[in-house]
Image 1 (spheres, rainbow, N blue to C red):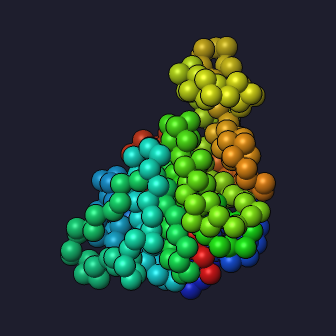
Image 2 (image 1 turned 30 degrees about the horizontal axis):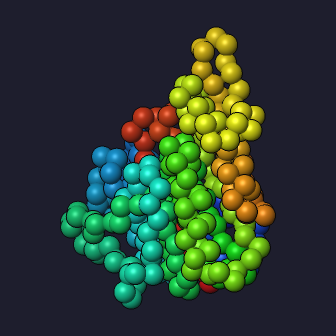
Image 3 (image 1 turned 90 degrees about the horizontal axis):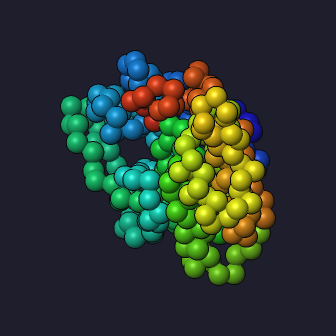
Length: 269
């Protein structure tokens, strides 16, 4: 894990992982924007009740660190994968007039893939995991939103299947798991545990029973790592950042219901 300044976007910072040939990727921190509390300050979500003009300004600031307009998604905790190569030309840019509050419609999906250079893919989170996937050579790229529902239902496997379909000769698959709620903070009921163990009993090691509450602590990143490894990803790296714990860096819906959203951006160089 490495903290970075998002050049040339003054005041914006984030976190990234190990160098990845042909791939750039990072998750934003919450500082450097204009949104007011409790969305302070770099809220990038349009669906959380924030002032649309503030969100637009925040996205414009982020745009300075990117090679093109990012491909945003309408995330629904599902498993659908959007083909970002179907976008003709560049992504739809946001309006430059702060008074214009409407945002263009986003594809309804929880993952996206591309083979085009310089096309940033975006995932918004506030406890769920953002996951970046590609091969060692940066031939094809995918990003996924992995909350427990999408993770259990196969969003990561669906994304990898789409990547393999687009680049059948690619090899050396790797993934980066960005900031999400950590294993000491993610308390869940038995139904969440069962959703994973019904498919793979070995994943029981990712759950720790809490006798006082009758609930379980779930290692969401551990679950994602196990699913990725079983799907054939040879190298999986984790940011190790907990959104619930690091209130100075990240929004967390569980910690602060109705919070803002950070974003994970990735593109092929």
